Each structure stands twice: as structure tokens, then as C-alpha cells.
Image (cartoon, rainbow, N blue to C red; front, side):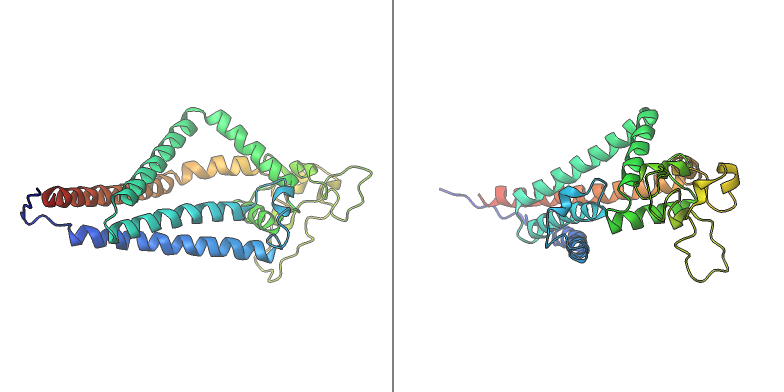
Length: 270
């Protein structure tokens, strides 16, 4: 025999719809990221020839967009449906994954601080691997060009890193027009120029030394530029990390509070 106790126990509409509103934004954002990722792949012809994914030797930025979009979409879906349907399983999945991601972020930050030398070497190797694959993927090419232009740098350590790329190396057997050159993003641009000169880096490294190239191209490596950028923007980086952490904690709080309300209602009615 069941005894029903009516003690005004009910799921808080405030927390329920706050949880839904919190997650609908991430659900829509995840959908947009996935759509952008597949659109980028379709523009590059990857969807018609999936073997291109395995042939790329560098990092395809579209992978990053798709992974972020998929995780955001799944979490947004679990949070929205879990809140509307008062589904404890989905809400626990949401709060558990968010907590796990927060733990990974915290661990990564601590390890990066403790093992700075190893992290610096890993980033350097990662950058050099993508220098080699510069011409293999248009999105990777645009990413490297943006990085070099924004940070006024060229290569990982110096412009000679572009010798690793088959199009820019200086070997005698190489007959590319870009031989002994650098990408246009390494060039020091004239503010008065209205048209980008994509051939400005041709033959730059064929003569002279880095000190002589400094009038034409950036000679500072992007690793050094990154090491200079971080201390200058430490408060911004810390602020972004704190905001992301707060958003994650708010999501966990809303989910756990809603779970508590649902369990209380179930206990009072059974």
C-alpha cells in the first residue's frame, strides 16, 4: 500500500527553465559548429573523398570545430531534454561530463605550468609538423598565415624553418618558384598597400642573413612571439579561464539542484 504525502514538494520552475535556457544556447551553438565544420569539409571536397582526412599530415582546423561542436551539442541536448523531461539520468550525465571537462582543464593548466619546457618543445614540434603540411590544407594554411600576421613572426624559431616545407626549401634539385622563400604572411606589409602581395616572400632567403631579411620579412619565430604574448596578456587569459570555469560551475549547480528537487518529489509521492 502506498502512502502519498503532499508537502508542497515540487520541482522548481525557476531552476528548471534556467537550466533549459542555459543549455539551449550551447545546443544551438553546437549545431552551428557542426554545420560550419561539414560545410568547410564540403568546400574542400572531403565529403566526396573521405580518404583526404587520412592523407593530411598536419592539423585540420575543421577537426577542432567538429569536436567542440559535437561535445557542445551533446551536452546542450542532455541539459535541455533532462530539464524539460525532468530526467535524472540525463542531468547526471550532463553534470558528470561538465565536471570531468573542468577537471581536465584544471589538470592541463597545472601540468602546463609545472612542465613548461616540455610543453614549449611539444608546441614547437607541433608547429613544425604543420609547417611541413602548409600547402596540404587550405584551412591549415589560413590558420598559419593568420598566426604569423597577427604575431609578426615567421616559422617556429626563425624563417629558416620553412626549409622543412617542400615548396619553400632551398635544395638544388628543387625548382619551385617559391624556392628559398617564405609565405606572404611573413612579409612586413606597408600600411599604404591596399592589395596583398602574395609573392613578396619569393627568394627572400636565397641570399643574405636574418639581419638583412629584417627589412622585408619578420625574423622573429612564433614560439618567441608566443612567449612574449603570454606575460602581456596574462590577466586576459586568466579572466577567460575564470569565466569558463564559472559557467561550468553554474551548469553543475543548476543540474545538481534540479536533480535534488526531482528526487525529493519522487520520495514524497512514493
